[in-house]
Each structure stands twice: as C-alpha cells, then as structure tokens.
Image (cartoon, rainbow, N blue to C red; front, side, top):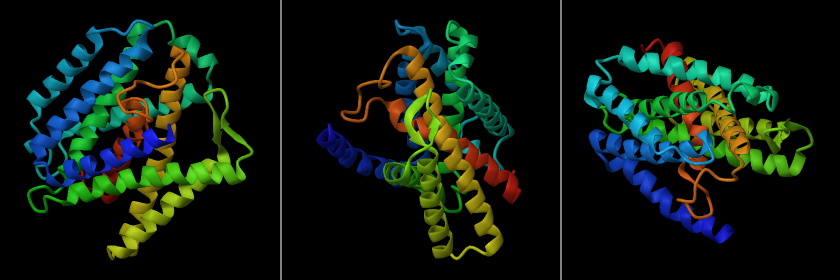
Length: 285
C-alpha cells in the first residue's frame, strides 16, 4: 500500500503542477470539470448503496448551466463576478452546517441519512463551490499576470498538504485527545494544532519571502488559518458520509489513495473559505 501511495503521488505531483502552470485558463477549467465529474460519480456512492447514475448527470448539467451564464473569461471584471461570490457564500453556509452535523454525529445523521435528496444537495453545495473557487483562484489577475493565480492556488494546496503532514506527525507524537471520535477516531486535537502550526510556518515563510507588508501578511496568515481549519472540516465531513455509507474510500481510481474525493475533500472546503475570506478582508470584491 505504501509503495502504491508513493508511486501514485510521484505521478500526480508533476501532473498537478503542469496543469497549474502550463494549461491556459479555458483548458484548466475543462480539467477542473473532469475532476468535478469524477467526484460527482463518487458522491453518488454516498447517496445510496446502489450509486445513482442520474446524479453525476444532474450535477454536470447544473455546472454547465453556470458556465453558460458565466464563461471563465468573465470571472474577474475586474472584481469577482457576483454569481461566484454568491456561490462562495453558499459554500461557507454549507460548511457551517457541516460543522454542526459533524459535531452532533451520529445523532445528526438521523436528519439526512434516509434522504437521497438531502445527500444529493450536500454534494452539490460541496462540489460546485469547489469548482468555481478552483477556477476563480487560477484566473485571479489573469490578464495582468497569468501565473499569479497558479501560485496562489499552489500556496493554498501547500497549506493543506503541510497541515495534513503536520497533523500526522504531531498526532503520532503527542495525540491524546480525540478530535471527533464518532467520525474519525484517528484524528486528535494535538494533531490538528500541529497541522495549524505547520501551515502557519509555511504561510509566514511565503509572505516574508514575497516581501508582504505587515498588514497584508496578517491578512494572508489569518485566511490561511481559516482555510486549514476548513480543510479539517472538509476531511471530517467526507469521513462522516463514508462512515454512514459503510465504505472506507470514496473510490479506487488512485491506487493507494482511494478516490478523487479522498484527495480533494480538504480542498473542497479550504479553497472557497480562503478565497472568500481574502476577498472580504482585502476588500477586493
């Protein structure tokens, strides 16, 4: 399993970097649409024991409709389009609800576990904001500096990866108090704090290297911490749905890593939270 994980990671990293820095925005959005489709198929496994074949189709039709009303070239004119801002606010509202569901699990599952429509709606408000925040960050300041959005996106991904690594090692070394035992027994409060610490070091290092003024450094650091906390929630929320569905992984597409959702669960929450908080605090909206 470890060998498979390493091989898959070694293959994925250059593909992700290549997509970030070499794909034109339209093709990057097309790739993000493919990720959206694959994740939608996996989410159908959360909805019922027999995956609903109609669910990915409905999700993609809704995403296609949003792309029809808002082509990716018109995302920033110069501020982020109000439609995407609305999607980001929807995402934040959903993750606040998700936090309550996780904290109250398994009691909270009584409200939604038998409802195909509620679980389908949860998937929609998870994946659509993920897609638009992914594309919006990649397209940030695109016509003045085409690579700026790619670096920002890599930074947020790096925060999540740093937090995951920090949580693992701090949890192994110091973990005693369970974070959400009913949802994910292996996660600890000490591990989460270690992940926050590790991600904070990365954020401070990057902003210092970039020469940010103290005010902007403080904004980026605060948004980074919010994004990392959101990434933990994204991970826990997917774990809650998997536990209720009785499955270990969302899929088998990535050997040693599970499915697409298992790789992007943290980012589904981290990306919209980072983007919205940064836009609000920097007043770029």
